[in-house]
Length: 500
Image 1 (cartoon, one colour):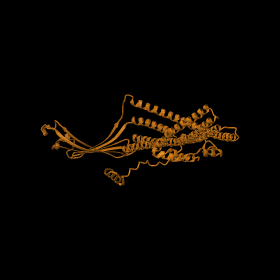
Image 2: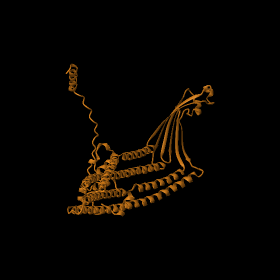
Image 3: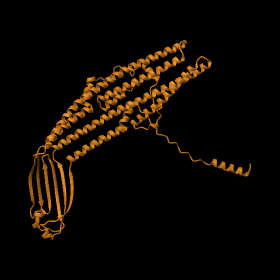
Image 4: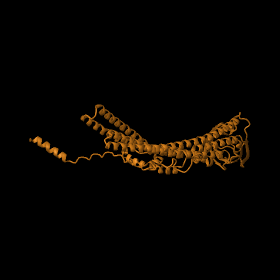
């Protein structure tokens, strides 16, 4: 080895002996714990963007109500500063024709001493609008809860179908390998091999499509729950297996064999009456009738004479105070002080509006009555009456619509219940057919392909039974929401639907 080569190897050995800088740790997404169906509903009510929007709308409505009450009932203070330059012929001999600069400062106050008249109508209107905002918020939360529950069950069903299709891929792959082996031995034709290969390719395509649908379902649910969809492998979700579901079906488990369609004691008539009393559509329609009646009363108030009591006083020190109280109990007071840029003789008090020696005061009653308004008040009264009639018709329509909605949801629940029983029966029949094919295959009377086909039919029947169970659960939740139960009762119903 020459000297140059030896020197190169020594340098290389020294470089390899040096500690290398540690590679940055790969970024790992925070693990996301997948909730149960009932937990998903509660999480959606707290963390979903839709719930945040609903809370913001409610807070805005409450803030508007507080603002209106403050304006109508609270104290209001205003300060007005006025600097005016004017010229007066009466002051020309004294001021030498120069303009006069007058500076004034006014402090005004307003306070409602009583709640009546238009103030009372405005407050009542604000109360009705605030209650409507609260009802709309609760209705939105019920809708979010039902949507989250539906999205969770759809995710579970998509995962169950994906796992079944993975089984189908493995089954068709085994069938294809068996067909190719039999073809080599001359027991199968090329057409049979091509049919097995086509069945396998179709199973792979269906499995891949189901995986895409599964990812979409998870992204939708994660969005509803405010979770990061990249933080979890959705294939790890714990869902019921085919064998477990089949065992429950064969054992007549209440999850697949419920005793009655409606899981609570209330009759359809009682549910309809509950909905008519608590549904936000009906309550908002009743509020619209109350608001329309307030509009009629407001028109009547606008046509009444406006009566004001006035009092005022002016002091020689160039200070003026005034007080006004109207017939609705609203008091307005002001104090004004002013000064001039030069001395004005006291003899010119009429020009300066300040008394010479004593306090000037006044008391009065002012009555304003409209003599003619070109028919505006009559048109306003007619409009208010028509709005009231419209609101009353809207209430009747809301009551009728709510009754039909509850009856429709009840009919859907009964249909879902019957479909669940029939799907469970089909799963039992598919299980019997598989056992029959296996027994025939043991006697040489059936082929492996027929057994595999019977197994596939059983898996599909079990998946259909699970899907029917989920449809039944959604029908229960939708009927509960249509009956306008409160969120606590709805949460208890959701917890009670955990069939396994």
